[in-house]
Amino acid sequence: MENEILIIILSITTLFIVLLLLKRLFGLKFCVLCVSVSLTWLTFLCLYWLGKFPYPILLAVLMGQSSLGIYYLLEKRLKEKYHFFRLPFLLTAIVFIFWLLQTIDLIDNWKLILFLLILWLITILLFVFRENKKIGEIFKQVIACCRDW
Image 1 (cartoon, one colour):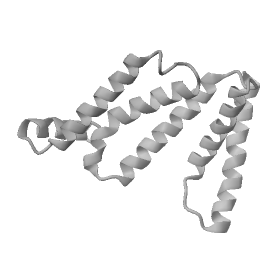
Image 2: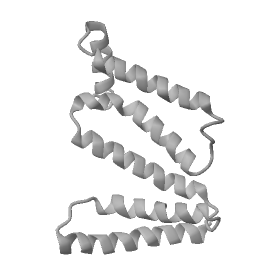
Image 3: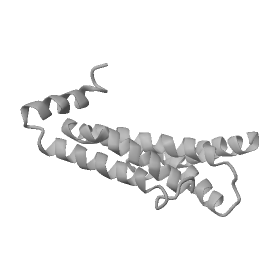
């Protein structure tokens, strides 16, 4: 597995340098590191699906980094009130990664899907009724959870 980690590190580094040059040449706006990591795991995910890369844990680490990167991008670009959706977003990303790695079958794990749907539904309802005094307090606490520590 040491060789595979080295290949992944070299892939990310090579993509980082190439994408940095392309970004500079064409004046593009994107996170070079995020795209380098994402392209690497997308490539190795395809190899994994083809049976050519037997280390899903390496993919899971990279995919987790991308899901957290998307989380931070959304957090930075969305109004603070939408930060209320952090928990269902991250949990959904985790399940999606496991599904992509064929670790879970979503049909067989209907309880997991049901839980996520209920969580999204509750979160959306709390968001919609956030002007209610009691719900508003919960809303403010959830929003402040990552900001006020």
